[in-house]
Length: 454
Image (cartoon, rainbow, N blue to C red; front, top):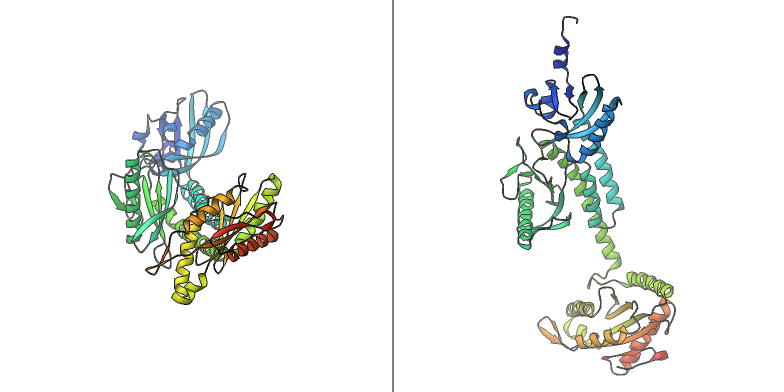
């Protein structure tokens, strides 16, 4: 062992020995530096080590270097570097300051693979947790975005869902885009859709250097500038969609290792999306009328209960419009229930067009609908809204190429004048509706406590 020089021992080390000056400029590196960072020793000498640090880690690395030069012995410090090929390396450092030489000597241990394995396992768990906790698909994908930012360089992130009818894709999630002109934004959207559709149809990950550059399958070794990575989402039921990531910098390029990592988590993401979509479908079936897609009685009762709580707390009025279609039974009897269903769908659309986005239109069953108005002007809105509904119904409906004239009878009840509970208000609005119907229909009337005729 005594015959082996210290220089030869350094040359044999798998970890890289680095010596830098006060300005962080490299004066010596061992041969292992090329294996870890991609630069041969003769290339590395003269470079500033801090310039090779990942942009997000430079500030904390600079602070750590300052502490070392003040005499602190650094035993374990982790940060990230940009390799020569643009990929990211995770490094565990041991370092100390040599005051008599005014040099900093450090040993770099490459922990990239360990960090990648840890990241994949933690990402799997985090995505599963997100799928259980997300209230809807945008919420889930927002969580996924945050998870991926811990694994891989991500400036922008988009999730495309595949639509076979087109075939085409629609973006279910997009991270905030950079401010661009409308023309450029439209061009970006077209390019993003094209890249995602190509990855989905080919069933393979794609690298791209830029929106003006070449797109290549992620199957070989690529050099520098690969700032886009598109990964199809696997699914047993056919193509699910694709993930589209942009690193945001030519300095931070995607690698085959990034592709492998994203391919691993894409299965978990696809399962999470399917679970969330199934949950949303079940929620839709439980809370919305399947024919008209309006809130059903259960969801309406929940909204009415919450609206009444707000009205009591804020001392504001609340109004209910109970709507029943005049002579609707004749449509079913003469044209059939299929025609009646089409008519109800058209009625739902017209009613929704007569109210504010903050109001609720619900179908209680059959040809009975109800409108919930709340807010500071809810006590004044019933007249305006009822007139608007009557005006909308003055135009015939087209059902199976037939023109049908259908009018509504509308009953109105206002909180607190006509009741203080959900059941009382709904009952009084219902009574007022029947009173309007007995008077000939095609009109609105308030409950007799404060009855007004159109």
